[in-house]
Amino acid sequence: MDSLSIHQLVEAQRAFFSTGATRDVAFRIQQLTTLKNTIISHESDLCQALQTDLGKTPYESYLTEIGMVLSEISYTIKHLKSWVKPRRVHTPVTCQPASSHIYSDPYGCVLIISPWNYPVNLSLTTLVSALAGGNCVILKPSSNSSNTSALLARIIGEIFSPEYVTVIFGNNELHQQLLTEQYDFIFFTGSPSVGKKIMDAAAKHLTPVCLELGGKSPCIVDNTTDIKTTAKKIIWGKLLNAGQTCVAPDYVLVDSTIKDQLIQHMLLAISQFYGDHPAEKESGLPSIINERHFYRLLNLANGTNPANGKAHSVEEKIYNKEMRKITPTILDSPTYDAPVMAEEIFGPILPVIPVDTIDEAIAYVLSKPHPLALYLFSENKEVQKKIVNSLPYGGGCINDTILHLTSHHLPFGGVGQSGMGSYHGKAGFETFTHKKSVLTKKNFLDNSLRYPPFNKKISSLLRFFLK
Image (cartoon, rainbow, N blue to C red):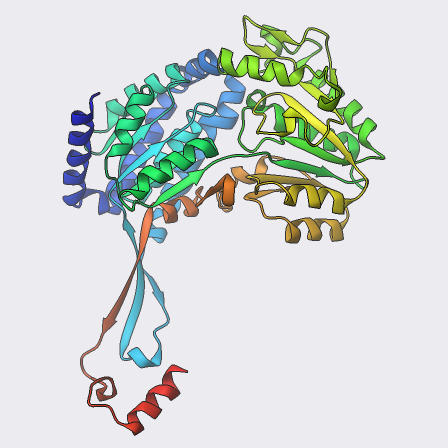
């Protein structure tokens, strides 16, 4: 698709939006229902595409991708009529007689750029929020997950006209062409480095953005926790999609007195989940997306440098090049300046670093950019309170991992380097709508105090009402 046709597409969506069709709530619900039915009818196709791109089993594909999208659509359809209603708010005495309302107004033509790691979930969940808000959408999924992206383009093309919703994907050149156009809103999920470029392009047109980024999400474990259960929950969250999850536990800061026990139970959990040979085809562990990331992760997993920490795994064969699978690896006690601690790992490698106090863990996390997620394992209520109140992060769990992003009632998003804005459930609807404030005045009484000429007495009255 060349730049001219992209421009024509944007103009076509603006023209369709101006007809007012997308503002009708019944229209929005009808389109969401059609999308839901289409996903259900293509479930096996989506599972096959995810298997080809990422090596996901049908169970994991449904659990982390298809099922979450269907749940989001059902929740949105159920609540959309109440979300759309204008919300009446208080009107101050100085404005009386009048009423005040806040309207949720669609932005118009929005651009959604989604990543490769959850190509169904992170494309369609965002699309659901945008359609619920009454917008037209250009969706660009990642070319890295090419099979899934091509399938999304095909099935979306079957049910929506391009002037309402269209899916396009391609190389970096297409990406740049898309960003030269003016949109009414841009939603991006990906790395902080690309997020900066998105924000820079949006600034040229003063376009509002929502950035869902990533970073190194810490997991803090104190000595009051149930070690066996904690290990299982951390490994489960870490190894979903082979660690290629933006909210996966990136590293563990654990009380030094239980560090060795925690590692032992983590290795046991890996064996229970994926067998003694996780890099084999039948293990159920997903694949690394491409060779570039595969070799990047191998370099991090080979903990031969003492600074990297001692590497523990359930088998000596650390990788399967043909399947692009890497055996989950625990790095025991790497230094804070080790390469594995420099950037988000995004793979099945987990550094475990001992700390002597909770304050030491807090100080380290505070010294780094604000993470997208944080996980605390502790039965100590004071420690729980201290972590929540001391550390800035997008969201997280106490005594679990990942699950916070499955709740329709919890806004999901980052802060600082890990992003801006949020979505999921009503928060997604709010993100894709502008809050338009309207004051409706009654004309049967017109307060003369507002009009000149002003005098001292009137000035005193105004001071009384406005203070």
